[in-house]
Length: 307
Image (cartoon, helix red, strand yellow):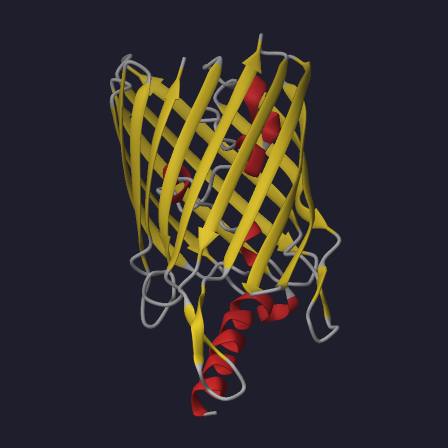
């Protein structure tokens, strides 16, 4: 019986991060892209790497220099707290600087917990899982303006025979004015979910504003600075600022800070590194946080190819 109670409590603990702040499926608000995490997730107007646009701002695709961009990633998310391992696959295609299409998939595996029957006999283990798959379309209707929409499905399975999911969508308008870019959109719109107890919880939907500046000097030195801010429908704000320096389109260093507030993703600082050669790139990001923050020691790596 003691073991049964322990297992029940373990399953309940898995529900806490999912429904904290009356928000369901919090992973839809988390960025698992190593290049973006290097700048604390400030990537709403990112055009140098568009593979993960189906999870962010699809309107950026027609402004990208690359014709196509593909990526795969692995993230150790909150290893000192949740201990989630996430993998992702993503790709985007820029059609003549006019249209854009993209798709992305991520799958998260959480630590296993014991399963026991009413008599306390151990029956095995169960690993909670979450998943999201999105598709995106973008249209550049003016030389300096584009619109993009993402749509997909997100789900979570906390126990055997107990899972839930819902439709998720984003919509953005983006402007590119020489070296400056700005985007405004709504993120993580969806129907919400209902818990096993009948309680209803909303997705972490928000109004998102992104802005950025990028410039290449002396043909070898590239800098970019980006800012993202979210106002959540359920209340609260978050903001991220990130910067990067690239030498000769080969090596990039990145850093950023995110203020999480009451959002599903707590505050953290980040550092990142990227290497690119003949279209192949390797990115890594490491998150730093103080105290008992679950974000500290989060590590993400990614491999991509663009042409």
